[in-house]
Each structure stands twice: as C-alpha cells, then as structure tokens.
Image (cartoon, rainbow, N blue to C red; front, side, top):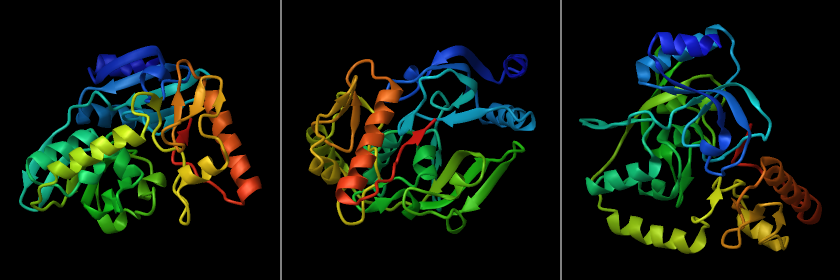
Length: 294
C-alpha cells in the first residue's frame, strides 16, 4: 500500500495491517482494518493527513474509541489512531494549553491537583479531549464549550488553523467540526482557582454504583430527551437486561449497551434499532444517538 510506504519511508509513525477494531474501541467489537496509522507526532500527522487528503484515500479518525460502533465487516481504508500520541498541558497567562490527545478523565484529575477544577465534569467522560471538543461533551449541567477559548486543528492541506470559541458553532453534542474536515490537536482552556478533588471522588463513587464500568461499552447510547432521560425511556419499555447475542442493555444503567463477551457489532446495532423502534411506536418518542456507527 502506497500510504504505508510513505509513512515508513518518511518515519512518520507506525503502521499496523489487518488490525482489529476490537483493540481500538471501548465496546470491543468490529472487524479488521486494512491499515491503522499511529502518528509519531503532530508534524508527522500533518504530513500523513495531507497525503491522505491529496490522494482521496478512505479514512476514519479515532481517539480512545469510545462512542464508536464499527462494522463487523472488513474496513478497506485507513484508520488514523491518536491514542498513542503524546499529550501535554501548559499553564499560560490566559489559560491552560492542552493537547487534544489528553485523556479527559486524567485531565479533570490533573487540573484538580492544581486546584484548577473548572473541568471536573469531565471526570466521568471517557475518551480524549479532542473527541470531547468534537462532540461538545458535557455532564452535570456543564459542557466543554463553556471553557474553550480557542481550538487548533490540522486542515485538509496539512496546515494548522486556529478557531475561536464563537466560531466553533457549539451546540448540544455538536460543533463545527461535524461539518469541516480536520484533526483537532490543541485547545486553550480558561480556568479558575477552585478545589474540586472531593467532588471528583464523590462522583466517581456514584458512577461505580450507577454505571457498568466493569463491562465494555460505548458510554451513553442516546442523547437525553429534553423532557425525560433516555435511561428512563428505555426502562419504561421493559428492556433492562434485554439481550441480543452477547449485546445487552445494562442492568445498572439502561442507556448503556454492554458487551458480555464476544458481542457482534450487528447484534449491538440491532439492539439499538429495536430500542429506537419501540420508543417511537409505543411512546411516540424519537431517540437520537450519541454514538457514531462506522
């Protein structure tokens, strides 16, 4: 494959062939991938991404692999995986400059250690910061968009661009990055002095009791309905614990679908579609997914 040769010849990172989506996603399902690219650094990522775009190569960008349901079929394109990228956090006069590859939970705790606790709500959100920005992730009535000053990303020409918060078109679980192509690499976050270590620990204990953290999952499947939480809708349908193959609605939290062992992505998708269909037919409520299906 020419892309693999380009990466190797230019020392832009590592390539894995016939790599399984099971190893790249938190749900642990999916088929094999023709080519997985692990960038060495941002400059390497710029060059490789430009090559991919210039040659119109099929690709998909993945961080920690949460909120993603890959197909069981063989993926013929390139997966750019960012989970091995180095991440940094730098204190500046006007905020904290953070790599988009920073794990969100670790970021919340690292900031709390510095008594910069504005992002404590991220303590329960799996994934990398770039994904949180892409989807404007949030919890506890807060969202990442409330704390972003600017975002830097690699455009399709391999150049680094900067966009201010007011141009990011943030909304509920969305941002401008749903509509423009690019790879988020860095963000400037505004913070203030606040000690949230106790809050983080209390929320952690609460999640251990209320979420299936001991099972593979994608996190929340559906966005919350404005009038009633999605878990309540699913519970009202009597689907707590409902299974298709090794895919099951969690007994702990019904807005989570868990992998009981060797769940097929198709079984997981069939379960999601069944919940959607029953919610619409029996309750007249349309559910909207938080996850991305590849």
